[in-house]
Image 1: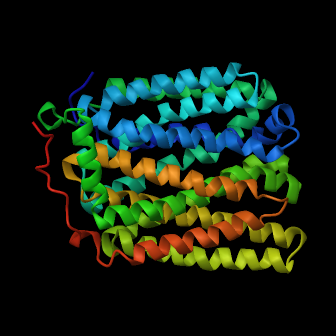
Image 2 (image 1 turned 60 degrees about the horizontal axis):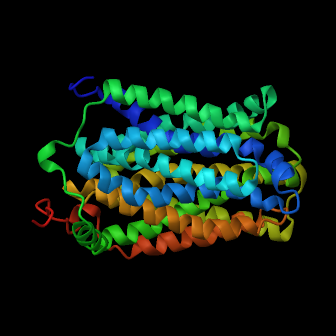
Length: 413
């Protein structure tokens, strides 16, 4: 155990790994989707996509509780408890005999993943603020990008050596390393006098206070649309590579390359955010993605490109989605968290839960509409980014001018 503040590089790396516990549980499953559909749901292959969205849904539900619990008991205990539930869910997945039980176990695993996801944001908010917080989050996203880059290849390697169920044992090992790192190196950031009693009346009042802030509520909606695009593309990417382009064997390499290149979005944001601000960058990224997704939709509908040219256009569009995500996600998180002060834990829960659950509700029907072409993901991205841009445009002012939630808010006696 240590009470010394971590150096900034180690802090960023630890935050990235905690957030990545969720990404690893998603991206390493991608090479297995076709095999899972053939094994557990051959009559309706699109149902295999629910392996992704069920995990995300569980994470969204758990997010409602992780923040308030971390405000009451501290960040570290809640993260470690979540990691334990994450491991339990992974072990249940390993032994699940049917798709229905597997999906239920994935919800449990997602519930556990919510704790490091939410409390990591609260750790950052406890330690940094303002545009510096956004910069730290962008650096963390750069490190985090390495996990999606290697996760599909890791999953494919595990499948080659054992089978797709063995991937769940990899989650157990990953969570163990991150939990040990956190327990031994990171000091608690929420001092006892700043902790909040866990009272339903106080929580309800806090939620009303948070959602009553116009900047926060509009940013949550924008986040939901951005996440929906990411979830849709991730859950349909492997079937698209297999069914549309006949490149299933090389999918992990393409996905890894795109994930690494997408780090450029987060890196660029670290250079720009201090100069231009969070909202302006996010809105510009969304506007660019509207143009890119409209172009991809037109290519699909008109059949203007075929063969390698069609595949190249899809790769460019997919890369643009990831790049714009790097320019949007960290900024939107910081934008929503900025007014919250001592309510960071509860705020991270409300923001993360509503954005994630909303994204799943949007993404599932888009993914299930997959018909052997990239049309549904492309049109879905166009609509989602247009809606997100509309919400951000209604905020009116830069975050520094937002009405903050008073730091003096405390539980009622």
